[in-house]
Length: 130
Image (cartoon, rainbow, N blue to C red; front, top):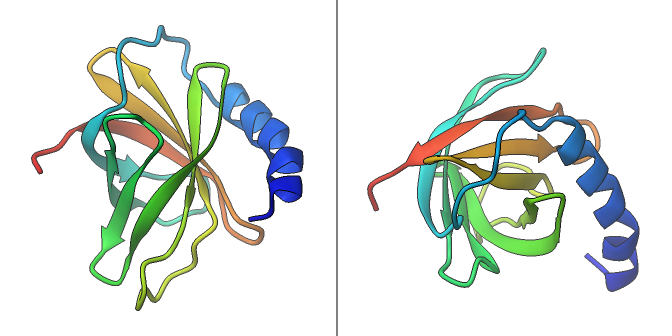
């Protein structure tokens, strides 16, 4: 994604993520492995595993053996870290969704700003074994 496009989309993604936020207080770093189910109106539910690196600048995501890849930090606003999903070589699904992650107590809330043509999903992720 170009820097110009990223600069245009970051405020839009931040507004969408903040509007979907649960009323709760952030609590702690995002570092580590998280798993849970993301679902939404008219969308299929997907189990996802997200791993965030120690610096919270990158990580990885995985829905299945053929749908996974790296995460790249796009922006931080309103307590959310916005990570764009990229595809691993050989992945057979679409990338480009943005996972908006916010720590809420012992969990992480994930609201996804979808790529064009996809549906928004969200859910609570819990610590996952690595």
